Image (tube, rainbow, N blue to C red; front, side, top):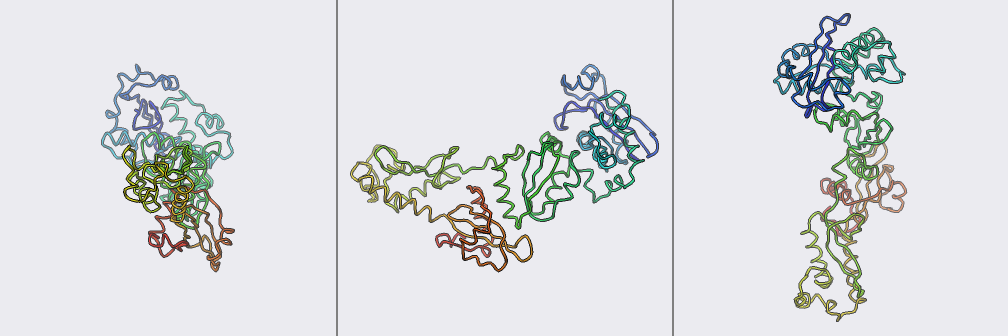
Length: 463
């Protein structure tokens, strides 16, 4: 038994909008056996543009029942039937959400006449309800009203049942099928093409533009998780509506998928990725030359397009490092902005400043020690490679980091000697690096030290 449903609402997502009208056509596979329709007072004003589209005004619903008034009747009509609608996840998410608020837990199998239409009647110009019905010579009475649209959808669905020679409807109802949970505009072939390996996936809009990039240990499972559940929020509903395609890039390991995701988000800047867009180390040590010719180190906030010598999340971490450099390489506290008052230089008293702050040491001599401090920083940045399983038999994967920056990653033959770094680089694909990627690699190295080959001794303990 099928319940063909259409609703009119005050907006596009259920958590902040109400239902203004609902129609349910109960169909047994051969004929309509019951029809239900009512206006509903949504409890919130109906926007003018919605009224213009549906013809439902605030005055029309003023004396209509609230959804709580009809919730029991609606639930009894739906709960034991297959829920059918045009773009089913929209109607289902609204009714599940509002029935839940009224104390009813709706759990139905679902069928989407948009998705089924693409399979049973392929090649049409459009599968929007109005244009789809026009192409099938179905006349819609009261377009954009729940009763008219539900009756038209039931007629459309009846034609699908009659013409479904390949069993698409039965296949969609199987427990293992993802058909009823996929976004309405996504071709099932895109989902079916996803492998069960690690990698990066890209959601595309109608024009093929990337709107979201994600990483996965198992591409098929991770992408499916985006479409499961019935989150009522606007962000998720809008997100699913705009997914028209998927492409992916398989990776040999989960670490490589983490790195590639970070690279691709920075490169493509997709509108639905937010967390990685915001990531940046908050502070950095900068080098500049003052008017007297002294090369000076300073700890400051990271700024757009700036190029710090070293960067940190914590100002305390940066302060501790610059103090260490100051004492180890005999730099002036005032020239390093560690001492900012007009008192006598504490570096003179502690014998690690030779008077540059008072002009008693020439810039060339002082700058030699600044250069040594910078060289120490550079050499202390980790150089390592991480070996792991390859993407195919007979190969191994390699991630190479030099002086704290990702050099490249890729797969090499299983018997390839990794000691020749110059030759190794010919096999690796270069990628841009940043602080986030450095942290990913170092975190992985600390968790899996048996996969790490350290290329400089200064980080042997940390890796």
